[in-house]
Length: 177
Image 1 (cartoon, rainbow, N blue to C red):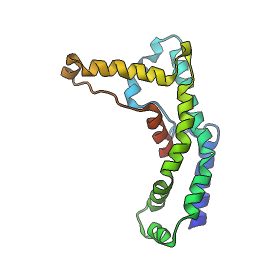
Image 2: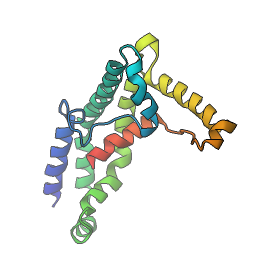
Image 3: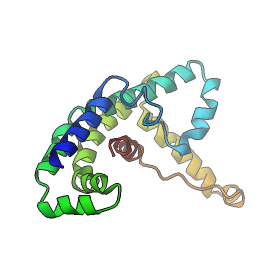
């Protein structure tokens, strides 16, 4: 069973680590959070906005592909440290027992591996020397000011409290599992 898990995780990590492993696969491609829909839906109004958005999504996915190159050893350690009891738990468990075991034993290590790479991509200066993180902070601050106002409360607007790098890291890791 350990050998089968090693082969499966190595195959998955290798597939994600290839160029377009994330970006070219619509099932795992990392997009901005739903809270950014106002930007995505109106980006065509900015000169060069659509290209800027696509470049950002490409960079985010390339960062995840880069991080996936280092995911194999994390999975390998979790598999080699698997006890006999863990193995029986997987064999007797639900259909996703192996995935659950791997997620429980690797998620934090993988998160720590992926997040700095994605954060670096988000901190990179774009048009006018402004990074994605800065744009996100400006957008959410303005939105939250509106949502917290009397008019926003009457309209039923909700504040946006999304840590962009954490959200994107979680999305990238969903693809691993």
